[in-house]
Amino acid sequence: MPTANSVIAPLPDSARRSVHRRSWGWMVALIVLVVLVGGGYGMYAMSNAMATGQYASRIAAGTDAGTLSIPKFGSDYAVPIIRGTSLGDLRQGVGWYDGTAAPGQYGNFAITGHRLGWGQPFAELGQLQVGDQIVVTTATATYTYNVTTAPMVVSDKDNAILAAVPGGVGQPPAKALITLTTAASVLPSPERLVVIGELASQA
Image (cartoon, rainbow, N blue to C red; front, side, top):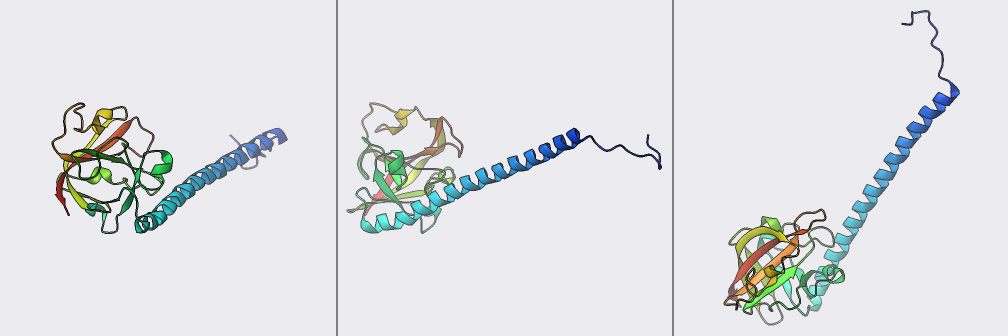
């Protein structure tokens, strides 16, 4: 153990350089991480701003499929319904699954939307409860659906949920239903979050 008068030998040059390199290495790694996280958040924020900024103009111009409103999400919640479910379609609003029923018709009117980014119209889909309203407005009518099946998680390969009778492939429809789908979580997942509602009124 060194005494008060001991002289501690300095580190060799090679050791000092090694410590210096490790310090700089950590700093560079931290800077890269900050840039990546900041850039990712910037792209996320930009995609949301672009999408929501265009929602109003598309609705004002009149979409060919209609507008989705969910009162529980606020009085200003209104999203264009786009025919199709490609990534390009979902950057414009919520997408109407090809081959499913039209709004108000017997069968299953099925739509999907982003849970994260690009306006994230279904970010709060998991908060819906039985009895909550889902409103679809087209050029000719307004359809109000009531949620009948609380949010549930299914496999993304479970296409039966899009059948005329959700889960009952081949069964003839006896009601006008709506099915909303989105990712089960904000991270990539092989599962989907699903909400089902039944037509309550038409105006």
